[in-house]
Length: 438
Image (cartoon, rainbow, N blue to C red):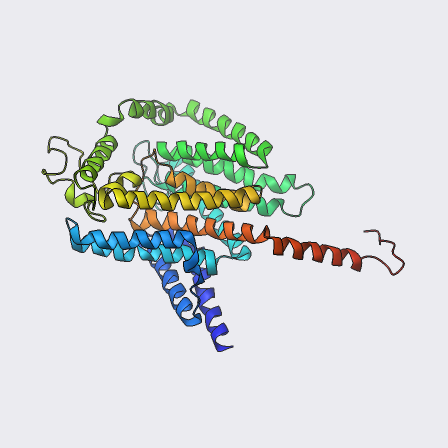
């Protein structure tokens, strides 16, 4: 009894911290990383106290542990071993958090709470971006950076933040509004309006990658989702709003359309293209071990293996593409290990999604993971805390939703549901056998 009560307290704390993560991601990078790390520690303590290590049997956990051990191994050969060991050792907190979210933290009730909190945070960020567009400052006093809007953040990252949480939150809320309602048209207007506001804000931020990925995610919804009619209506509404905004402010067209086309046409000459080239050059120079975890920023200026000093944008905190970052930092074995992990995740989500007819509870977070892992895109650093917390939150969300979908489609669960349905039907019949009218 004491152990059960002990675990209940740990679980309540872990659940509260997890659901608070969308809020903490807006408040500060350190706060969100601290909360995630505490959940990982609580899960480890709980596993040891309850002697429950069954979560280690999951394929993705085993692949991730092997990848983590590889990161530790290559750190001894890094340009800056101290930095590499520090980044590699601390990376395990993300694996523990995702396993905790799947195995222990997020059940159906807490998935619903997480979706509502994320939706509320997105509504605040989107409203703040729209206010900044109209007034020049957000509610916290942050000024817009030219055509790019920051919302409540210090840097122009409101668009990418909304893109990562948009589909998990919105489709989950949609599923909740649609559940058990015969004609939920009025109730469905709420997530429809929220989605229109979110997409409008993403368009206004001027973040080209965020807009492209969010539209890509909408296309996936149209192709896979059972509520395709509503997705098409939403797409039409979003298109109309974008056309109106573009007509009202031609600078948005210049940023989102003309600038995107010019960047794609001359990508190799842009700062992103040069950083990609720099990462590939470092990985090619050290194909087995790479330069070390989070060592791109250290090795990129080395004239022996890096690009020549004449390349002005050869250096940065990371190469702005996660796959190139894995290649540069951990070598060919590292990037292959990471790609294997990605395949394991996506294969599982696909199987559970097909079995569950792509319910919004699973499709939403799965799209969030897929958009983050899309290879042909500029991305933030995979090992930096703010980007990492956002990704692992959505991944843990998806893993838990996939587990729930698999449990609901298991033969044992289906048989139990059939027995309950028969029992309910019998209880509604009188002794003579006639069914009582509802």
